[in-house]
Length: 495
Image: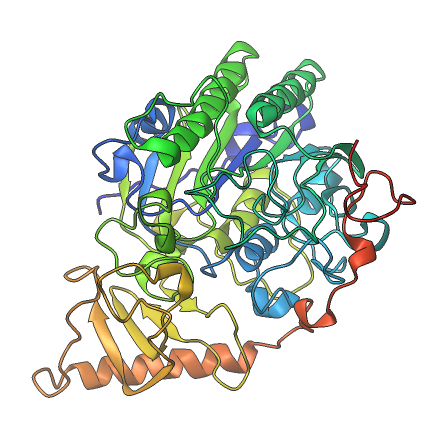
């Protein structure tokens, strides 16, 4: 095998709160499989992420559960497919009534009973709700600083709409509140100052680490960055300093923050007792062309269930514990919760967990991955299934997010297609999914296909769709406003 397993640390560290491992979970936004230097991009400037990749375990076959934001974040934090928690179809908006149900258990809620300090900084995008009922502080996090949804979900203000090359949601929506910066459940700034945003995030995260280390308290820091989602922005420390233009500047600013966090972990003496895990929520927004990211050799991007939409970069870094290397085993954002729980000795939630504990990849490796579209339904179920090196597409469909590529199957014009028999690809030989295997030329594949169909049937029998949170609709009164009694809205929502 060309990979190493992550050691089960309950043996190494025991069970006292002072020796429990710390966790730093870094989650990029719309960062593609081919966007990092360590994954082959020739001009990305990411020295700190390159350091993590060189000194940690780099994944080549790591998956998100959905090719758009909100569903993928729900799965990351709960270890459950988004269909179970109801975070579908599409994404949540500033005035959405629904959000991540409070009966779902997040990674933070799994760790808190063991005495962990927990904090989230950055893009939440799992709902706000009435009286902030879905915010991070209601989902197991002691502290939160960030924008509660995507930063393009606002009117033209600050860097959110800069003519002529940047448009927010296609046009400037003057009927939407300006983008707020929230601290816990309160609006700290509206509209947010994007030029200073990353510094605020970095200061908040570093202070959280230093405070926890001083108290000798184990901690979980969740940093879902706004970078590198379109439209990109960057403060003075990164603007104009990369070779890739605005996208590269945003990526460099994210990398600078990661470097600052690593320096703080070292300075406080806890880096050798901290697992740092980096990945992305979904593939690149190819509709934005060079401003949307890069999927490398993979087909299509954001919005599709092709590899480019859901296979993402991932790095696990833990000095002295994780041996540097590369793993070609399948893993997923679903696996974060059960893995962190195992390393901390925490109890798993009393719910169906789709994630796999990968603390010992040699013994507990993931063999399958299910691919749901942006708008899943019980009628169609999964669009694709990966089993080992093979992937079967039962349905394919393009997406607006991937419409600019020459590949017509990526475009929004590529309508829903049912494949019987399913399109079958060998992802080790053909990661670009260009050459479907011929069942006529390979009779042995019939046995594989029957096994795939059996796995699909077993999974579908275990899936119970939760109530769609998006179908609950919207209420303009729920959009965050720092002057809730002011008039006329949304123009008066400034502070």
